[in-house]
Amino acid sequence: MKKNVVIIGAGNVATHLSIAIRNADYNIIQVYSRQIDNAVLLASLLGVEATDNLEEIDRSADIYLIAVSDSAIEKVVAQLPGLKGVVAHTSGSMDMDLLEKFDNYGVFYPFQTFTKEKQLRVSEVPLLLEAATEKAEKILLELARDISNKVQLSNARMRKALHISAVFACNFVNHMYALAGELLEKEGLSFTLLEPLIRETTQKALTMSVRDAQTGPARRKDRVVMNRHIETLNDKSFHREIYTLVSESIMKMYSE
Image (tube, rainbow, N blue to C red):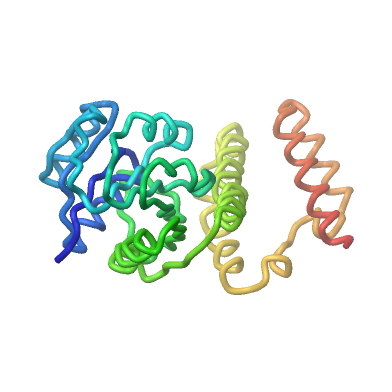
């Protein structure tokens, strides 16, 4: 028989995970959010009860997933009552021991960028797990394998390294797209001009060594071109600083 689950949080991660968990025939019985409108929105999608009061959390569940911001986990845990089920947070950068007040606890970390409005195949999302007890590990592994084809046991150091790498590979890259878009917009050019380049760069990163895939003036140590670029950016000091710093990093990597 599938287990009962309470979702604590109603943001991007909570939304995608709860839908995947429901589709795997688990019984989601309650959704919590400190903003009742958010709790109601997700709960109505799932057809379950909503609450904005942690003291009203259903104590009969087998699994409690805390999918809130990293900074809110400790506060949420402090307000939760004693729970007999397995309690896990979904953070990649926070320690498992934040949950040590519970008998069985762990980490259920989905390694992906989530947006509520964008559909996502959770079955393809890597799930990294850590558990404090054999019971917690067994239950979290069962849940993870029911919703994803990519499940791996991990520890805090592994998760933190992965989380930091994601900032470089996702957050920073996306910010670079935003900066590139600003430069294009200033000259009346469309961001769509970059689409073939973005696709090709991503494809190469996934099919060959990323070190071998690097191209551009910094890879060639072409300071003539780089200096021309820097001169062009002289009215955008922030862009210029980023361009210089990243170029120096690339040249350093290929000098070693």
